[in-house]
Image (cartoon, rainbow over all chains, first blue to last red):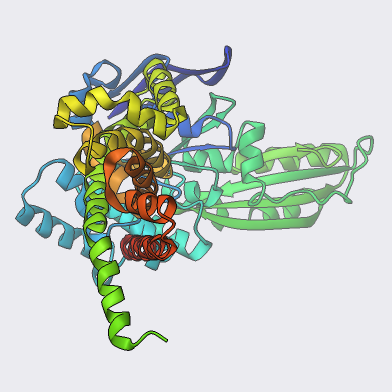
Length: 340
Length: 226
């Protein structure tokens, strides 16, 4: 378990203090995949680097399985780091070493025996499906293959935790998917806790169990991925979700003063997506419904649907209709003038 | 017209004149390079790792070392040789001859080597170093298993540059009793106006520089897998 308590990070450059992280509190459970999402400059990189002390927190503590990382001697810290693998956006491989040597590197650092190294590296090459590239150099590999080497290297010392620093941000969508699947399998198979930082929605959606949204060094939202996806409560999360949420086209403005018209954004997930709720509503109340747009997204193993509709009718019918929708476990937002 | 047997005799004489100084030059260059790298390599490493934000940040040490190196590099070589006579006498027992010349050559080239190695090691991507820290590597492990292997092509080219530089310096050392090809060129070519000896010396030097540079390029390319 990773417990981050009251963590702050301040950089001083030329006498100026820049606060990168402010009073961060997080608990990451064993075996989960935890996402930290934010725009660039939000402090994600600093936060993940504070977990393995690549950056020292200014105040606060980071505990891993009860060990306070901020209080370790350099030697103890090196030993702890061997149990925390890390993968990087730009892979950070040894360019003058072969794939084999790159994966063997952490084991050599740990002074493992040659026979042990050989066995382990061959195992890992199988896990990341790069057996045929054993003696290739990184420059001969594609981006996805390089990241696989990075993952194998991170796994070499049988870590409890893997930290992923924008590991798929330099990769194309197809390669990203295969890397995410690999990480998912590793998490399932070995029970390794994975902490992922990313600015990519799809990474959080396809990979993570829980997510924290970071903005200007502060966690503004935290929770299960499904909850945040179905009901983002902050502007930043909404902005992230923009590509998946049905947005109101700008040319469909509605007259705020007209009581006989209302635009709604409906979110439905889980069982409610199987019920013909809208159709029931039209039959039951004296309203007309015009569907503006809609979509369905898969998040982890659930579905989240979004629907933009315009309701016409007399004000009391509209009110009743909205109540009915709410009763049927749909999340509803009333939009005014095209603004959520 | 000179007969062919005379030409051969002439070339043999020229070679006999050149042979001894050539070996002296090679001897000076080899050991001066060796010692300057032995001194310069650790200095170059210290310059890099004590720099701001690096493995073992120590700005004060970095500035002091940098300043000393700059001062050493500012002293004209011919002055340095004379200034260093006492040190040469202390180490080799004399100030004359190729062995004595190795002392000032090594001292003069060491700060140069330090800078060459510094710039090579600085090319190593910080991300790779960060990745090494994250697997629990110690500072010596990072230096010898990551930074040096990663910058090997550049280091080889830097040392090639050093060898050729030392060859140039060794000619100057020759002028004040160091021996070698430089000494030969001055005594025969310059003072006795035997232009053919001067030209022969220069040709040998050109061939030497050419071989060293080509070999350096070849090796650097061979170890470069980037």
